[in-house]
Length: 127
Image (cartoon, rainbow, N blue to C red):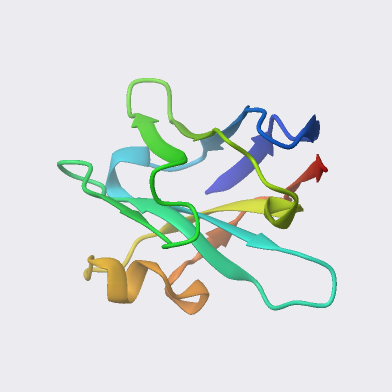
């Protein structure tokens, strides 16, 4: 599976961005999908995930209530709508695909659970 993330950019605090991730080369509906981010000097951290079947969603506490993940299995796309952005949201954002059997926040919040990664898109939030 190949993943291509887009939609990053520079935005002022309080603004919004919508990230998109296009998947190709596999049966998209077979994959749990996740978004992670990595700021300079920090480890990659979980942002959000969405299940393959009924689309159960999961969020890191730091983004809950501000970010919304969604997927369109007819278009092989996953999205991350980011509202009320804060300077601490500045990072490179990565989409990832997981083909594993397990779901739930415990598994889908772990980067090691994911088999495929996109190239990342930069999000910069100015204060």
